[in-house]
Image 1 (cartoon, rainbow, N blue to C red):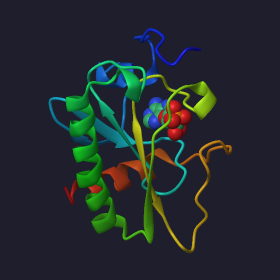
Image 2: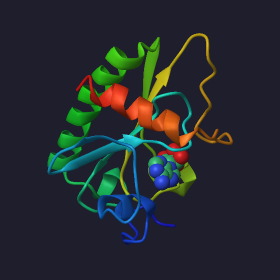
Image 3: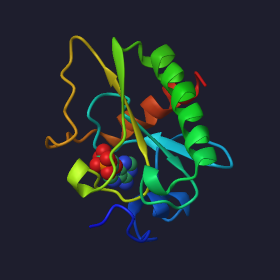
Image 4: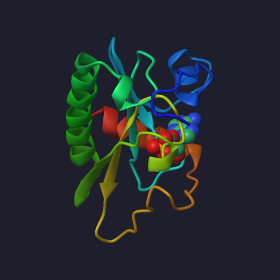
Length: 144
Ligand code: AMP
């Protein structure tokens, strides 16, 4: 699929923005929404998205990119304070050839722990209990 293809309103993140699907919310303002990844690469794996529809970074306006990355920094600090990881990886994929699977622009914040394996983006994802996600979201949000 071309990188600059049309935006499809049926993608999962669009449904989360519209409130048609639940999420474990970490942060929200008028332009940005952040929630936990439900198939996390590590404990505390968080997604940050612009609310305005765009398929990937190439179609996102610079102001919204700025807002999203401002939130990425703020949420990374909250993750650091809440979960005390040994490192934090920030990733962002554009197009299926790059590994993008949800076609609404998003940034991944992935805490890394020396004593635990971080699953890579293209590996089979782990599942995590919903109750654990509830606790993690509260822990991170409390440090914002
Ligand atoms: P990407 O592969 O970069 O497009 O990332 C999409 C991410 O969305 C993956 O890490 C998925 O685990 C995650 N994901 C898929 N469905 C949901 C959902 N309902 N809530 C939160 N994260 C999701």
